[in-house]
Amino acid sequence: MFHDGDLSDVLLTLEILSNGVVVNNAVTNPLPDGTFSFALVGNPGGDNPVSTQHGSIAGEAPCLTCHSDDYAGYLPGRGVVYLRVTLMLQEEVKAWDERMIYLDHGGVASIPVNISLEDGYPQKGIIVQASTRLYEWRGRTFTTTSDLKGQANLQVEALSQNPTTYQISVLPTVINGVLYESEDSVQVILPPGATTAPSVTLHVQTASGEISGHVTGLDTPVQVWAISLPDGDAHIATTSPQKTFTFAGLPVSQYLLVADPRRPTSTG
Image (cartoon, rainbow, N blue to C red; front, top):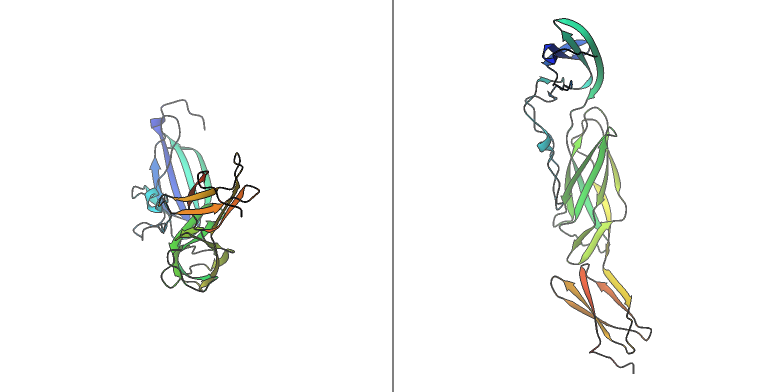
């Protein structure tokens, strides 16, 4: 709507309808640029929203930082809701519009996870992740770590009105120089309103490091040092007649490579 007068004379009313009945309303005035907004809450007086679990993942911000107790109106519990905005000027209705939204208050569900390693021994500290996209819109990621028994318990968000589908996997994790990661992810579908789920088993593979390379500018075999950073542990290999070298079975780490021409070796 076009209005070239003083916007302070314009009053906007929001009506919230559920099952054809107005259950709440809010009013506001437009800003000088003509925009307006209504702050609504979907769970007044209820539990806090689900926070992301940190595990060993750095840089994740908890969900609670985006929620505020300062709101002008509240939304009903669940299902289809209509939002009707009416523009009034000098107590006369000049325009109105309506939108339909769908409300779904999520709860918390537990997913037990068993970590199955190739050698059969449990490992503490392996990072387990559950990820989903709610209503093909909002991404959710939850993480936890395995305990001394090689088990983990994921606390995830579960929809109340529709199934929630999660992909469960082990993130690449280095523990004591060994890399742990999932062979495949496992899909878990939580029915509406679920609070628990059957346990899932993740098959995890392990790997060590390997470095190979070629030395130029030298005519005789030399020793090549792979120095782990920052602890300084050194591994030594000798170049082949083709001036190549290989370090196999290294702990997964960052390495500094140094060719030592002062340590020539005999080829026999």
